[in-house]
Length: 120
Image 1 (cartoon, rainbow, N blue to C red):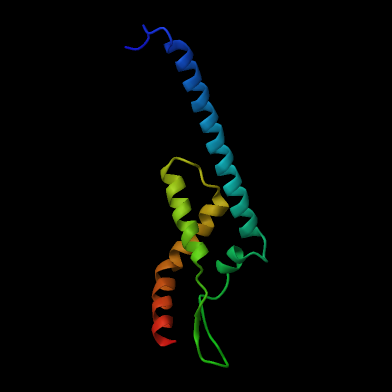
Image 2: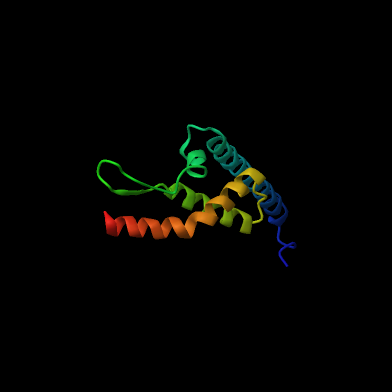
């Protein structure tokens, strides 16, 4: 339809180049995200690794307050993994495993946070 216009071929070439650049940028951003999440999971001093292997709840000895250990970062990770997978990205197995572990305790963590808020 537009091929008979005089400036269409240069425009099409530039549009294809822009599309390729955007795809490269998208892949780079995903790779950076995956590297950061994997580093956070594998480093025992990072909260994300502790949050998937520690206690879900504890009661303070001195004050008797209920503390829920389910972090908002895990909720964010669940959302990110779900959205990226729906966009067609292949999420690394280690990240997927961590997200699956977080998903198993998500409902309990939310309920415990509500109970702790009421109790405290």
